[in-house]
Image (cartoon, rainbow, N blue to C red; front, side, top):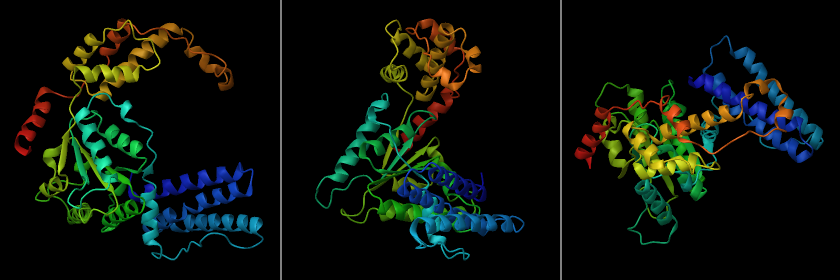
Length: 393
């Protein structure tokens, strides 16, 4: 999805969310809160109108005026004509900075993941937990927490889970950033988004910025990349460098995740002094992951050692094992609920009155599941990580 479409989508989501609050409000305070949410759509509309084709501008400009009129009239009704909150101007470019702040605010998410939700990866968990503790403790000026951690390894091994657990345990502001969220085809805009992202993170510290698919933005600058990409990468490097200033600076931890560390620019790697390999799970980790994803079910009849060894032989990642457990559970569900599909004709209220039949999981449930879950990884691809670590570690 391009930048323009993304701005429009976020604007519409904010509008819909705010209007639902207003429509269902049972107090003046709830109405005011709904109006504030609706107003949060306006910076997104400003960005959309700034870059939209001329044919679209009249229609959506009128829509924006209707939104502002709706908010104003509601406020006048509530407050006897006294306008509450800040005015949002529509002059082109006037609120560009606020627009970018609003955009990156939309990347904040609440993490409910805990360390107990992650099977294995003890070394990675230890480094992140120590970093968080050191950041909070009083300490000599020469001792500083890591401000950049790079997770690298095969797809599906838990890199995102590690970042989410770090944010959840610290109760930090968590910016969950897909690289596509901060890249724009308009010259200079990506740099402004990155600067706004780090500026907002400093204001909302402690904060964790998780940059997923990191290699998409941090490719080697010596290769054939555009000038705009070089500028974006330079801005990111400057922001990462800025957090080394002093012991009292706001705690903002940047976590990058990549499946292809060999593609990263050397200057980027130097800004991530702690680089952690997140490998495929070993036998013990496989068993922990199975227990996590079968929680609440009886698994006493399972031979976890056998299942774990099969997972290792098939080069399963943590994500593959989760999918394996889901397939096994569905095999059990279909066997114990023969009329499951037929109940789709019942009203949802009726479904809530019924209970799903379950039984202890059996090895046969997993036998069928193994046939459906295939790993995309080859031995040659896994060896590449070993080779890269041999050069860079």
